[in-house]
Image (cartoon, rainbow, N blue to C red; front, side, top):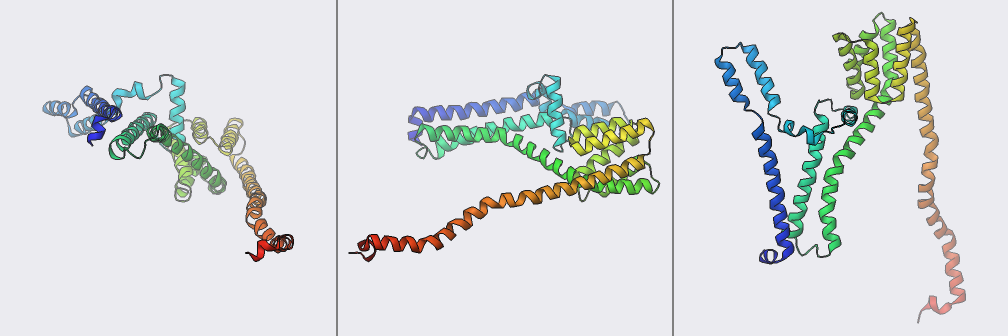
Length: 323
């Protein structure tokens, strides 16, 4: 410990840790200091004799006001409206529908990056100073946790988006079949979408949430075409986009929705069968490399090995018999 205090690098590391810690403390204190006290506001409103419902609404508003990240929204969110919309849409596609999801994502990246830097400084200069002697290993120790903390959440969001797209693509043909059955049974398209959304929540949660959201928005009074287009943007799946186009055209031109659903559901079943055939056809190609790696070398050893040993013995008998 005294060697660390006497070395310049150790002093720099300790100063860096203290500086980052003070920065985080100042960040939290500023966030808590600028926000108004919700309990004081609640007590003032209570003294005026408001109703219990008004007090309940005030408590809900106070719960929204105590979010510390609200004071740093201009630092955590892009100033460009287009970039902000793209970031929010990315979070929605990953399944995070909160209004402040994009801001919380950036805050998480910042916290993990700073936390990784603090841990690397603590490990490299305090706990294990003799392990990382070379500049390369020390630089890797300092940089790797920061990069992991910053890009790790982003990679997690991308994997979530791809997983949701795959799930929606897999479950959409079944949803169309169920929707067609409901429409042919006498229900409207809006009731069918809401019913299918409830039925699919167990097997395909992402698709069930999207269909349920469509049913709730239409029930609230929004136009069906706009709601379906919003769902296509959220899902970002070609099958959903084609379905929305077919439904909007059927509603616009007054054609039968049942016939459109029947034809489109048949096409989706054929398309799913073609995707299964494609995966089955790709499988032998993927297995070729593994077969060559694990089958050909042992086969060559078994077939050619004795001949190589015999030829070596004939050309150099002393190498086989030994001294």
